[in-house]
Length: 317
Image (cartoon, rainbow, N blue to C red; front, side):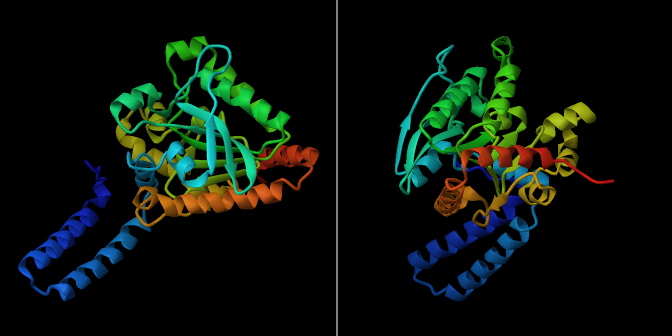
């Protein structure tokens, strides 16, 4: 059953009405083309009014839409080949974070991404996209392998945050993420990062240090989720809307602040409305950046990446 967000209800109701009129026309053989055309025009206008003026909180809701494409969906639409690699060689394989070798437009790459589930069974298996320390240790193990063989790295971020459970903390969740931050900063191969849905906290940063960072139009990238922020500052979940405004977590805001390098446009209504269009936009960015970054000497690549992160948050009085 399709999920409808509150702000989408007027659109869904109008789409339902148009569908009913089309069905009635075919059954009764009546000409209602003018009325249907009028409603279609009204529908397009309504979509633009709603989706071109989304609040930060509404974008957060869209980023979590259960029909939104996940990492494996984009792999299927973008990559010519993909071979998944498992395990951190210390504890286990974390299914919340997938990794493997891929091919794209003649480039051989190492690809990483958080993966959520489509139903409760798969979500439990993949821990709702919240990786354990073994997921981040698997990632850095394979990033080092990519560096050894000169393979560029592409990552897809889609997580509310790293898993905060007791077991994860006992196995060194914070250390695993911090270690990845340090190691990724010094990788001598190109790293391209896409936030495709939720980009929450250290869980996102654990595979998010790159030369190019992009956020999809209806995704978010933040130090904390709006709910987490509301719980800490106001101790009220109802303040999540206010928190989303304050966090400056949308792609246009992040671009203005210099935190990211670009925003990837989505179809009107979100990536789930036409995943292939969004996938094609991502593919174009990857190919363009791989062609550009592969020409930069490794020493300069690392230095540029270092300077990039040094300037984030810098300000003048």
